[in-house]
Length: 194
Image (cartoon, rainbow, N blue to C red; front, side):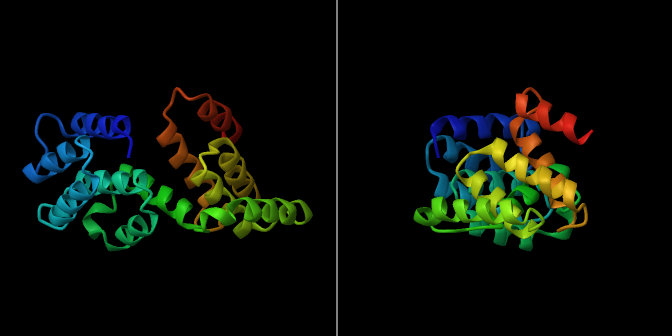
């Protein structure tokens, strides 16, 4: 993880938590992150994740770190293990959608170009293949082509709002949240779904 990413995550976490996070180990984990010790930060957050009182901020920060560290399988497993009390949190729900998008396709890095070409060709012949569209969106996210991923999610949304519990809409909203309200892509795609 880049130091800038760690510092931004720490600043975001601290602004959410106020002066004091609920758990002292949570703050220690965030400080470890700034020091470039992501593995130790992750271990520390896991050690307190299931301690009462259940605090969704711990799960949110843990998922963010796992995503930034490209530990997608671990993030996906975590979303399945979260305590029920935490599932109502909006930020956590957005991150869970983000994990769902990324987990939709997990090819080896050297196979990405060929897979993308195959998906584009197949979708050109038959645009109603929503599962392929979702996998393409997932790959596009992994290579940081956010606009193309949004385009695929928009196409899914337009084709079938019931597909995977409206993953097109949920995915777009999760990406909007990640990009922030000031991003031009958010303006562009928000106007398309309004």
